[in-house]
Length: 419
Ligand code: GDP
Ligand code: MN
Image (cartoon, rainbow, N blue to C red; front, side, top):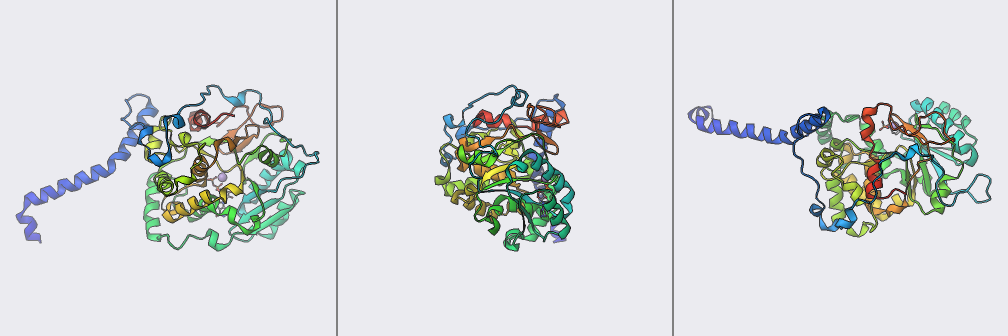
């Protein structure tokens, strides 16, 4: 072989050039992305051309007609700077005769997060639950310690349920190839994706995407409010938020809408399109497709995420109807994603997964922005201007102003609704 190479310098040259070309080709998209981002940040060099999203390029089964993709509202001012009141609709007070909803405050938490949890519970109890007394349900992949249970019980007069997650809901499924996970997680590290190599983080995102509503302890429960340790609640809530959802025909409530790191979900949208191609019947006619596929606000995100804007409901707060997640459309969708492996080979978060599912399979009028709920999960706020709020600056989204553009709530208003 050595003699053959020596005798054929032309062949060697051709081989070297091909390898070099291949390397260049493989690296091209990323360097283009970097260049564009860097140029945009510097505001100097002209950004590299990005293929703009064209509605007519979407597959037909998405039903993406120009009317469906049209801009509906343009909001230029910050709605949180106006006086923010309770939502319009049927509101139930603590003293009303009406029964409570079938609901729970739902927390996935580790034993070592007790302190951060107690702070959050104090906020939730003060602003809401001391008036309404909804039970808390705590979930953990390991048993809760006695200290944990004792201190949590002392933080509320409501019932506390402590649940262990069954292994078959938490463990990495057997069809996931650990060698592939290892290699692909290194790529995520190169892409600066947080927690890329932390197996528990991947499992947590999967559980929150498609497992929580299957836990036997929630079998007969319909509504949940997801609470995370170390989050803050600032405003007094004087109506029953669960009854608000039920009585006003809402399915999902959010407070914050932000862009995701597109490198963590490169194949989420293409995998979603595969699923929808098989099941176009699950698409809701009044869906939020235009919000999902917007490519104008962050062309690079849209390109790296292969057609998804990455704008999503930040799911560390959510008030939702588990019947939606248990529906055939959403649950089959989750199963399809789960088989594809992106919870492990990429780092699909439960926030974009919920958001894409809601955006495609739910009537958009059933999605509600709880603008009156003052909230902080570092580093982002939802902070209304209201005399019911204490401890946050009205209208603030983030403390570092250069991060304000991470807020994409205006996209939801623009392409879905601003009710
Ligand atoms: P981030 O908000 O994306 O930075 O992720 P967090 O670290 O806040 O985790 C999200 C939620 O899942 C929080 O409520 C955590 O307490 C919980 N969580 C994350 N990993 C685990 C885990 O391995 N076990 C348990 N029991 N809870 C977890
Ligand atoms: Mn968190």
